[in-house]
Image 1: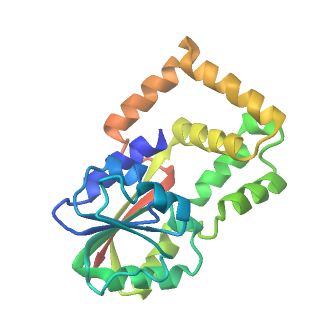
Image 2: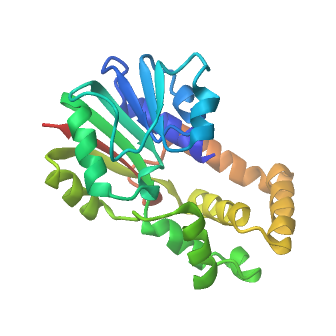
Length: 243
């Protein structure tokens, strides 16, 4: 659900002619491939992920590298994009400066990240509360597992980005209301494995696919078409330009 929304959002923000493109934190390349771009490069610190996409015929080049030391020349990329990766990366100021370095003049940097709203939704979720999976101890475990180090609001992102000499051209929230709650709930259940969470996952999957889940499926389909512009959500997509 979340990746289908993000694929549509990125496709609306990225100009396919602003090449070459860099997928920052490309993982196994599945998401980058969904954007159907050309002349795409990728970097990630996960060696197994890099090995899995080195010969997939989509990426021009993939490198095992940290975003704080991007192994490409100055002003090389027309576009850098990063999908739900920056929140896991240490040394954020240096990373943003590296993005600026490798971007061409007037190049674009597009990224998505969760906000504090995502964790607020988890803490307020009654289903998770019933199985004890939304207290501070479990949230700490969840954040350690995912290495969440940059859960920032737009004002802080603006400060960091402008300090690096870049400029935010646009931003918007996504995954509002029931959709954000559903995704947050399921992500927590899949991350923190307990007998109760496994049982609840099976129950929720069965319900989602049944007639009882039809309203949610229809609502999500409508959201995917409209993206409900302006509604507050649990995640941010930010478009940045190099001056």
